[in-house]
Image (cartoon, rainbow, N blue to C red; front, side):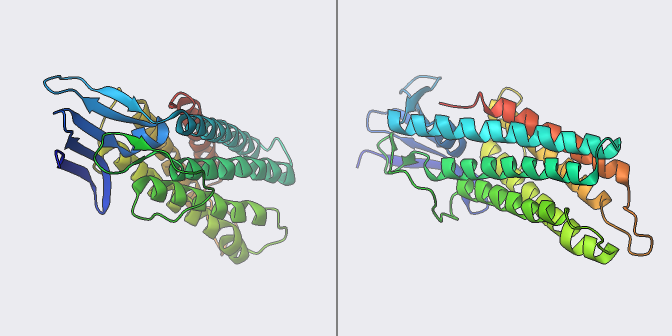
Length: 279
């Protein structure tokens, strides 16, 4: 056939990078994140030490650029609004309904960003065969591809934003007992944070081709690292927001608010960085 598969890398059931030899002796390198974010596949000519990017067609690149822009702006606005809501809650600068409204609008932007990220993964150009090129398919709003790490990480992220939406809607309810608060508000918050952490770890794996790494010169690594830090801070805030049934008070109002504020700023910052990771 003139082609040979050389090496597959990744973690668990997921492949994040493939390297194979082309007919002319060149080496092709496909990476999951590079394909779905930049629409590129790397090719290293025979005898060379550096690779050159081989791009998908113009249709795919325009799609990726637009979806990336929507996701980046959505996470920036969502993070900024969450930070504002947490600041108002911490310093008692607004009524609870005002703070809840700000959180809810921020959550809507998070959901939009999560869905845009999922659609970007669904419509990423594909490596098909061993020709050393990426293939563009018709645009789709939905697919089910649990064998692809880019699909799984963005789907779990999107699911997390939907669960957060339940938490944010229930936060408008008044006169809840401590047990009702924990069941209707705190439990969805915890589930959403857990989904964010899972999605973040999968995103780290996609960049690193293993569970952890340090790639300080990689923009993609900085984006997923800052997002994962934000997810950890959100989880800390969620744990602190548990309502003690015996007293009706939160474990720590300050930690809950500051964890939310700093975590939100991480997502907003990652949104800014994401704006530069495009074709």
